[in-house]
Length: 103
Image (cartoon, rainbow, N blue to C red; front, side, top):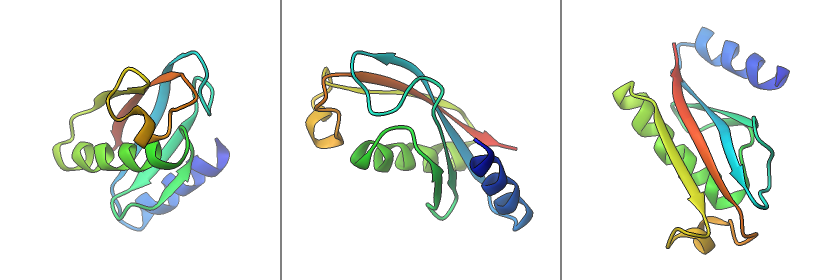
């Protein structure tokens, strides 16, 4: 968490906008535990982790929307979704990720 906070502080001091993604719910098997966090800078640079591989790419896309609109989003990824296998949650779990802009 310390690395994420340091990245956020550094990015904000450079004038970047930043989103913070947090795993708020986990069902079954998931790559990262409840409470895992990832910061996403407006140019796509990341610090931390909320899952793995393609899920994080999808979270970055959602973070772009959050940064543009200023409105937080709650997104769900898992085997119930058509995209589950392509997004990397073939482990059988589901996660909910809350994404908010850091002001």
